[in-house]
Amino acid sequence: MHGSDGTASGAVRDPEGRGSRFVGHRSINRQPGAAPVIWTIRTLGEIARQAGGEVRTGPFGSQLHKSDYVEDPAATPVVMPKDMVDGRVDPTSIARVDDRVVERLSSHVLRTGDIVLGRRGEIGRRAWTGDMEDGWICGTGSMRITINGSTEIRPRFLFYYLGLPQTIGWLQGHAVGATMSNLSAGVVQQLPVRYPSIAVQDAIVRVLDEVEILIENNRRRIEILEEAARLLYREWFVHFRFPGHEDIQLVDTDLGSIPRGWSQTCLSEELELQRFNIKPFEFADEEFDHYSIPAFDDRRLPSRELGPEIRSGKYLLAGESVMVSKLNPRFPRVWRVDRSHHHRRAVASTEFLVLTNPDRWPLSFVYGLVTSPDFAARLATTAGGTSTSHQRVKPADVMTMTVVSPPPAIVERYSAKVRPMLELADNLLEQVEVLRKARDLLLPRLIAGTLDVSRLDLSPVPM
Image (cartoon, rainbow, N blue to C red):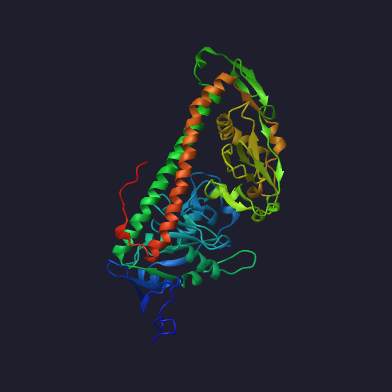
């Protein structure tokens, strides 16, 4: 028996409405010149039960309290929705708990191959649990999906399926809550999942993983380049092991011992705080590059938005600057920005301090200064607020900081070494974005079966 739309009675409706021919819980994709591929549709709950796995929400607030979190960097991380960035867990500002809490929350421990899904707030975030995250905790606001025992669907294929725009739309459409969206495990178990044979899944996953590997390799190269720049700053301007340091004596100052001929200076004497304010929403037809805290946390690239979509006043950016977040300085956010060759106007959140004046200090040197552990620690001590999650620094407190000022020749020599590193890091970040866009274009076509995976060229991409 069939319904008026041709769907077999009792079959799970395909949420993407692809007009395929249904056979019970299966559909057949026919492509010219290719063998037909059978796609099965089952709910996530059915898949998990068949696999001996589960769909389980993270601990509720009554099980995991703020007082359980510790500052120990060696403690076990707890994965919240905010930590899920582009399909992976970003540990930059992750919360941690000690072994006592881990033992108490043993039913929420993540294992390799698990998928963590955001169930509260920003519905649609998800992250893969790799070997590094094995043993971490699924946090409040998150949900753990385990199907490692499935003989029908690869966990990695399901991970990509959960990243489909249609899947995210389904989850968002089934979330409840007026002020903050929530998903229950029961609702997520009803999610229809459409998948082909294991062999086809493996081919699809291989294509998408190739792109992910390129993204991850570039991301690691960026981290190495930025860390090299920070280490060189520390070597020259903290430990004072710059070229020729052997012949220069140290002298005592309020900041401790510094090389003779160097000086102490107030930050405001070397840098300007850019505060030119603009109301983008007054420009109805203009697109802006919007440098916001969420954009930094997400991809470290500005979002492109029409003026009316930006609903509050912002700083107008021009030329080169280094931006430092005023919010929660315990987790530094430092953004290098160069708008010298852009035609589109750019704006920044007023949660950033926009530092400029490259005529005095090259911004590669400023980047080293504001990312140094000493500066970050001093910034954190000036912050105020009602809670540790809403600490802010005052611009005046930052600009009145006293710092060491090296001779211009040393600064220029340092900048000549570091500038190419940071420029390469910026270029790699742009490559990462190109790869992400390619992945996001491939993903729905591969998962939907509209792109024949056997026809794709999987030869390595030269870097």
